[in-house]
Image (tube, helix red, strand yellow):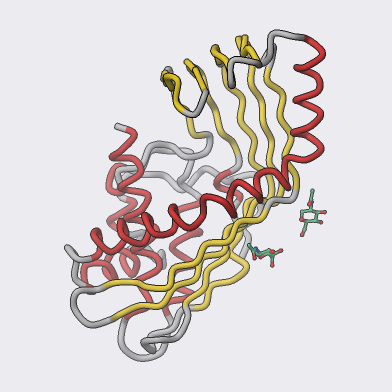
Length: 265
Ligand SMILES: *[C@@H]1O[C@H](CO)[C@@H](O)[C@H](O)[C@H]1NC(C)=O
Ligand SMILES: *[C@@H]1O[C@H](CO)[C@@H](O)[C@H](O)[C@H]1NC(C)=O
């Protein structure tokens, strides 16, 4: 289930990125922004034609995970009633798409405030020193998370992208996990550390792992793209760009998720 979900998210993202491959000038940028706005208005509902669950709030669980003795980590964890809020508040401050092969395409998506709450358990030990005793509520909030994606594309068959780069930026990170570590003072110390240093820590982790992730994402995107024609992909977007009739892709899904908010863009 999880997997289908990610696949459809990748589908959507690549569809959006590729909608600009149409001949002539890139009038698709405004079409895409319009599509995203139509999408935003529906993010509190599942969108069956895109294979998406409701994304704001995004609810997950119950789910469990286990890591046995890998890298000195012994871990079993679970979540239940996980709710992530704020995904539909995204902004797209940069969207620059180039039909000309070899030129860079850039998109920046920013989430002003996302936060999640969940029931959780986390049991185990780190390096046999730190005992996790986590059980209770977990909350996290993230301010000004932004992701900048750039890539070049090859428009001849098979469609593909190259030189993918992904940059992440975080304004602020705050966490509170009940009883995460057995020892009370250590627990307080770890929370203080993450709440003070979280942005830098995450930055370091991302710098460390980014090479692998980016290569995998690029392969995934290219595998996916190779099965589609340009026309298929453009139709998804052009069909979803709003106007008088809303697109078949949003069929049966009311655009009523943002009634209280004033429309942006
Ligand atoms: C994305 O755009 C915002 C607003 O212009 C900017 O503050 C942020 O630094 C950009 N993100 C990245 C990762 O470059
Ligand atoms: C988030 O971004 C907004 C607008 O760019 C800025 O006013 C605010 O100070 C930022 N907040 C944090 C915690 O970085």
